[in-house]
Amino acid sequence: MKIHLESERYPLAFLVALFDLSLVFLSAFAAYYLQTGHFSPQLNHEVIILLTALMIISCSSFSNLYLSWHGQRLKHQLFKIISVWVFVFLCLFNLLFLSEQYEFFSRNWLVLWFVIGINLNCIYKIILFLIFKKLRQSGKNLRHVLILGQTKLTTDIVNRSIEYPEYGFKIKQMNINSADFIETEYLQKVLNTVENNTYQELWICLPFSEAANIKKLLYHLRNSTLEIRLFPSIEELSLLNYDVTHLMGFHSINLSCSSIVNLNATVKSCQDVFITCIILCIISIPCLIISILIKITSPGPVLFKQLRHGLNKKEFTIYKFRSMNVHTESKGKTTQATKNDVRITKLGAFLRKTSLDELPQFINVLQGKMSIVGPRPHALAHNEYYQYSIKSYMWRHKVKPGITGWAQINGHRGETDTLEKMQARVEHDLWYIENWSLILDLKIIFLTILKGFINKNAY
Image (cartoon, rainbow, N blue to C red; front, side, top):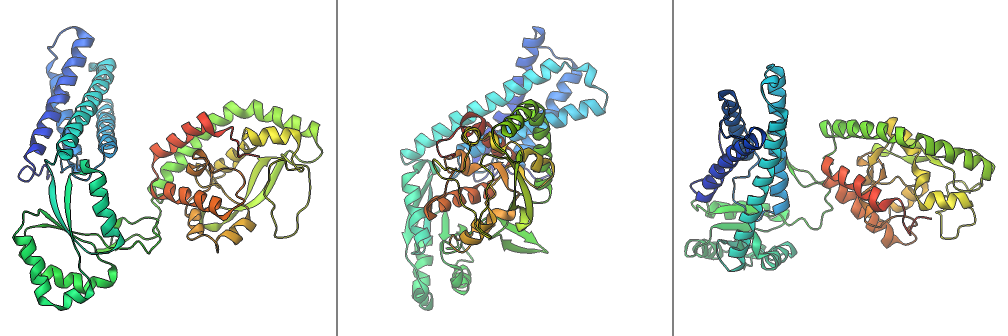
């Protein structure tokens, strides 16, 4: 098993790993003392502590927590730390259960150990991060970088390093274009610049069209010991996901791929069903009352049904509580609800304002047609119009549509009477698809409960 400590390049990484190891032991003994009143755990406890410590160090290594923090965000590091501790302790609980050793260990001790350990680890990493941030803002602990290129991306990278010195990079830009590659003297100038300065990394920031020249440049740098990175200038492309995937032994850059596929889609669906079952138990009586009120206050069906596009543009019937008087629309036309819309009933206005009209969509979730969180499904006529007006609009249908979404909790609800409003909603939907995680889903659900039900744009 290879442990990625990079102790030769980053001596501090080895010390951080040792400190992590010490924290696991410290938190375990502290929890034991709080539980029993003394610091002398039995031999079987010591074995479990040692095994857990080794697992946390190994998982932290595989999560790249011991690589350089240059260019890393604190929240990403903390998320990795929390994930490692949760994973290790789930494994520990399962191991004790399967080996029938569970009765020999206090559950209070294990839970207390987990709580103390994860908090200590996060706190000291935050302190460490702040120390490095202060050092880098004062010009210390920086990695010196030479960046080649004169594209918009090059300028953005240089400006970002200046705006956020805590990333720990000091970048010098060297312009280069297609004509320069023809001159061997210019390439020699690049090589001399690299060799005669204290640069630790070389970043090549050129478009894909310069692939042959990039290869030529790398040939001239074949004997260099610099860390060389390629930042392909692809700002002219619309990207949904630009991770690198290995397929049949080849590398591919994902230009339009969702992370919510296969196992992730299954996990998300399981989360949807679990939460939906709980919610339906809670809202069953309110839904019954709303149904009776709709029948009493206006003639027509309780539910409003309409075709919408779902996953991969497949049509499905969406359910809502009817909030308008029964009316007919021209074929192929769907009129959005507007402020003071005469079609909306008095009860319907309340239901739309509080989003209670959306409750029947939990049935769509159980049917597997929708998710609790995802891009809101638009009317078919709106999709037909906006797919030609907004770039990458139909990428929203790479995932199941949702009852709530990232766009909705960020204020992009209600009528989209301008192209700019719809553009903003789509941008938020695509950001969600690209950055999806179970934690993000739970965050959106939580924020919807806090501020999403009542909204001034919902009418």
